[in-house]
Each structure stands twice: as structure tokens, then as C-alpha cells.
Image (cartoon, each protein chain N blue to C red):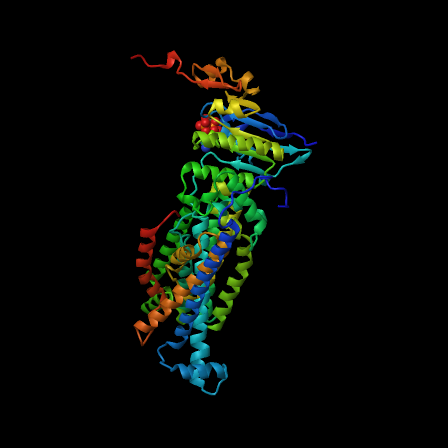
Length: 362
Length: 256
Ligand SMILES: Nc1ncnc2c1ncn2[C@@H]1O[C@H](COP(=O)(O)OP(=O)(O)OP(=O)(O)O)[C@@H](O)[C@H]1O
Ligand SMILES: [Mg+2]
């Protein structure tokens, strides 16, 4: 909008001790500091995550391996650092950030504090795709290696679920109830299809499917990191474009529409981005619950409902929760790390209860 | 020389029923028009259509140019906001299109000035969901003013306000209309308030605009009896404006 004369010509504001602009800046500084502290905490946990693992390497040896590069002479150390710990950490950061962002988007467009990236059935779809790949790979030899086929089918199934919900939204509108009901239908469909496959699977295949369903960073590798990372980066410009539109939606659909916003189009865009972020995150790691539910609440507690800082805060909070869960999982069981999906689910229940008990507004 | 705003409305339907017949409205620059009518007469339907939020589209034309719906400041009838955004945030959202990663200090200063003018400065940092209904309504009116629309379409803007703020808001709307020359179309239930502040009153009844004219001419005892089913007593205020004291018509009072 161009600079037109303000509606308040000639009205002198009452002398306030501190102007709104100064208070606005002070609030921005406070919120920026909160995000910075969260980012520092994330950095600390990331370091801790690099330093822990079943191999029990000393920090000194790790540092040497890191400095020597992927081709370092200490083969074992180089492999552990460059092929296991670092890709797992990067995957954790990307998945946590993606789920945090997707969770905030879902809670905003559905105007529901208990929505998450999985509300619309995306995780069930991914699980179905993965199960299909694992079973198919066991039955017939396929050209793709299993570690690539499984995420590819998980991704494709998530997109299929997205298409179903999208179709419903096109036909019946994008009211939150419509989207959630469509999501529930999609979730039950893919869940039962996946159960059917588990029922028919041989014990070995069943074990593989179940292992996949526990979200875990152990499956991470550089291909996974680059695919999920690219999806995350590709989604960011679209989020930046809609920052204020998303914030307007916090006022409620009626007011957002009265402010000239095309709410249905915004919901469809945000829903597509959520689907992509979620698919990128869970296809390689399996279902990791609660991160996408809790991170938006942490973000709102830190910076309020302005999405300019809310989205970065949700991304950082999501990554922080995930990496903290990864460190915890490794600390709890020295031999084989407990999958993060299990840790987040267990730790998520008290967090969710805390959210419900302290909930203010939406 | 500013031109008048021409609004052409098709027949408006809700569900299967036809709520309003097709009509044409012409709003002079800076004019304050009250939209009155009993419950269910179609005031909200009409305003929603004008705001571009109904299935049927109204055509708005200002000086030969069609208005976009983003240029209309529409305040819906149900306004409760559950957001934790501050009052200042809420006001700034009125200029949503002008906001970027950084918010221009000029906008913040202008928003503050408007809050001061409306006596809302003390609430600037309060969360919207912590305000009373009337406070929320005033903030939302301020937000629509901050948009600097070409037309203000307000659905019962004084429904939650105390007497002082009813007068204050209506007086402000008049001033705004005159300074910006954007007309105001407001649905009102308080006929005395409408008579006092509106240049023109539109009566919606029986599925059409049943009367259109100066308050004194339109708000006749016969019309009030017919559409509102009251036996009105019409007094004159000091400034000569009609004040309507409603009484239930004897026919409607149940026998003791
Ligand atoms: N979604 C709907 N489906 C069917 N009929 C509707 C719908 N919404 C409104 N109506 C009907 O349309 C008519 C006009 O409604 P509208 O809300 O425009 O009235 P109003 O003049 O604003 O009334 P009020 O003074 O109560 O706000 C009413 O008879 C109402 O029952
Ligand atoms: Mg109404």
C-alpha cells in the first residue's frame, strides 16, 4: 500500500513515557534474545550429540577425525565421525526443524493448538509406503536398493495422502473441520492398509517394518540429509512470503478474510508445504511424534504469535527437542541407542499435558 | 472533485431462501449511512456481499474504477478474537500488505497515534484475548480505520460498547468519513443512534431496501410499527434529532 496521509491528521498523541516504537523495539530485542538463547542451547546439544555414541570415542579422537576430514588416516574414527555421527546430527536438525515448522503451520491454519504435522494422516501414509517397500523388496528383487526404495515409497504415499486431502479441500472448502475430518479418514485408511501388510508379513519382514516405524536417526546418511535438507530449504521462501498472512490468520478466519486475505488459498499453500516438510522428514527417519506438536507451543511461549520470529523459533525448538531426545536415547542405553521416536513420544506426553494445563487462548 | 461510490448488488440468497432483491446503492463521498432493519432482515448478508465475502459478488465502482475487496474495511458482526497478539500488532495487521520482515517505524508511530485518538493507548501492549468485548470491538474498528479503506462497511460496530464509546465511535466515524471522504455504511440496531449520526438511513425489510432517506423522513411511527412491531414514541433531542423510545404495541403484550 502506498504512503497515504494517515487517518489521524492533527491529533497529537498524549505524551507517553515511552513511545510505542521504543516498546516495540524492546520487545523485538527481548524476543530476538530468546531465540538466540534457544539457538545456543541447540548448538550445545548438537556438540553433545556429536560426542556421544555407542563407540565411546573420546572428544580428542573425534576432534582429530573431524580435522583430518572424511579421508583421514584413522579410518575407523573418520567413518564414525563423517559417516555416522555427523549425518545423524544433520538429519536430526533438519527433521526437527521441518517438523517444528510444519507443526506451527498446521496449528495456525487449523486454529487448533493440538494440531500437528501428523493431524492430516501424513505419518500413517508414510508408514504404509515404507511397509509396502519393505514387503515388496522382500518378495521380488527390485532395481532400487532398500534404503532408497523405502523412503521413496514413503514419500510417494505421503504425497498420495496429500492429494486425497487436497481433493476434499477443493470440493468441500478448507474449513478446519473439513480438513481434519479428511485427514482422519486418510489416516485410518493408510493405517489399516499398513496393519494388513504387517498381518501378512513374515516375521523377518514384520520386524523390519516395526523397526522402520520407530522414528530413528540411525537410518541417516548423506543422501537422506541432502534430500530432506533441499526440501526444507525449498519451502522457506514460500513461508517468508506468507509471514504476515499467517499472523493475520491468528485473528480468526473472518477477520483475516475481512483484511483482504484469501484464506482458502493460504490454507491450501500452507497445507502443501506442511505435507512436503513432513514427507521430507519422516520418509528417511520414520515417524517421530510430538516434536511437531510441542515445538510450536515452545515457539509461542518464546516469541508470541508473530510468525516472523515464530517460524524460526519453531524450527529451532523442533531441532532442539529432537537432538535432546537423541542425546537422551544414547545416554539411556549405551549399547544400541533408543530410537528418538520413542524418546520423544515418552517425553512428549508430560509436555503435552503441560501444554493443556497451561493453555491460554489458542 | 471526489465521486460517489456506486454499488450494484445481485439478488442475495442464503440457503435456499432469497434474502434480498437486486438493488443499487449510491454513496456520496464522506457520507455516513445507517443500515437498519429487524433481526434477519438481511443487513449482514448485504454487508458481506459488499465486502466480497458472500457467494454473490457485488460490483463496487468508484469514479469509473472497480474496487477490490482489499479496499473495503469490513467489520463482521461476530468479532471475538482469541489471538494472543497485542493490540498494537492487531492494528498493524490493518496495513498487512505494507508489512515486511521489518516494520516501518512510521507505521508504528501512526498506529500509536490512532490508538491515542481512540483512547486505546493504555491497551497497546495487552493481548487481544485479554480484552473485554467492547475493548476488542474498538480495537477492531481502529484496525479497519488504519487500513484507510475506500469504504467502511461495519456490521453493528457499537453492539458491545458502553454509551460513551457508542457516541465516541460514531463521532469518530463521521470525522473519518469527512476527512478521508470514504463513505461509511454501518448496520445499527439503535435507531436513535442511527438518527443522530447518519446522514441517511436505509431500511431493510421484506427482502428489499424498503426506505432510503434522511433519518427524520424514514423513521416514521408507521414504519417502526410495521417492521419492528413496536409502538414508538418519537421525541426530539436538544439538537432536533429524533429519539425513539420503543414500547411494545398493546397487541403484543400478553394478558395479565
Ligand atoms: N447460512 C445461512 N443459511 C440459511 N439462511 C441463512 C444463513 N445465514 C443467514 N440466513 C438467513 O438470512 C436472513 C438474513 O440474515 P442476516 O444475517 O443478513 O440478517 P441481519 O439483518 O444481519 O440480522 P441480525 O439483526 O440478527 O444480525 C435471515 O432470515 C437468516 O435466517
Ligand atoms: Mg446481522
